Image (cartoon, rainbow, N blue to C red; front, side):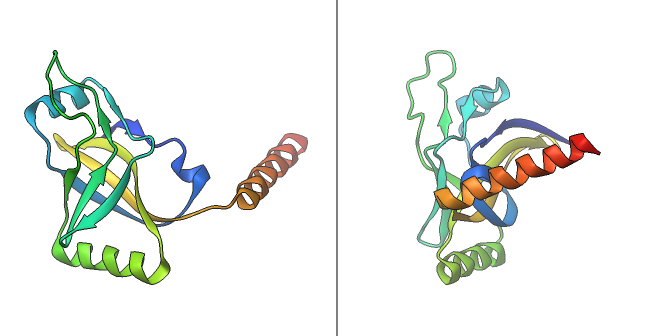
Length: 142
């Protein structure tokens, strides 16, 4: 059973999502307590490779009880080697980025849903908004 803690609201509008993966996160104790209290923000966060390991950067976790730690530190994502290789080859082949979509509880563990995505242009965004408006108008008529 999943309980969603936070979502990246702008991900689906700004990016075209190609593939999704679920990863564990390496966290410190105060970060788990803060995430349990829903004090996390995924806005402007991204994932990157460092020495064949995947890290999430710019994920803001508010400090817990006057804890003086780095709120934006890079946190290691826990995936299998074959998943890491698949993600690395797809990002290099299609020139895509890796963005986090949501953070949630799964069987008592904190998981991060990441996706391989391509950035949308302004024209594409406008086109999608127009299509959604047209669908909503047709649905209201009939």
